[in-house]
Length: 95
Image 1: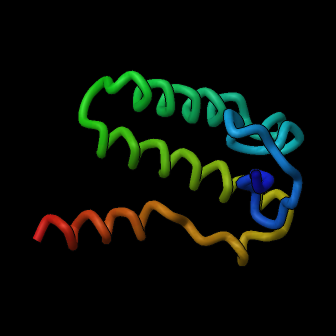
Image 2 (image 1 turned 90 degrees about the horizontal axis):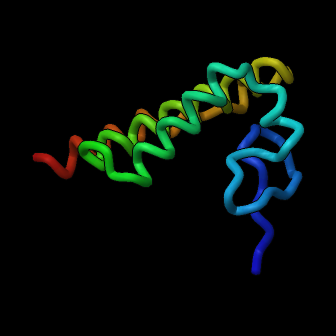
């Protein structure tokens, strides 16, 4: 089974499948951002509303966490957000 890598830009640490980032990066995130990520994920898992919209909420929260981490580590130029790509794919499918 391949190792699952941390979502932080440039991090090669492994993480458990139940984690978004390695423990070091997760603990560095501001508490409101961690709370937002957990809330989005739980709402999506429970299906509390439209699942596509909930999934996009998760992706946007993850993008913000990755951006925040990349900025703090001087890697902002390497950060590529996923949410705009997902929105474009959904728009193309809706046509």
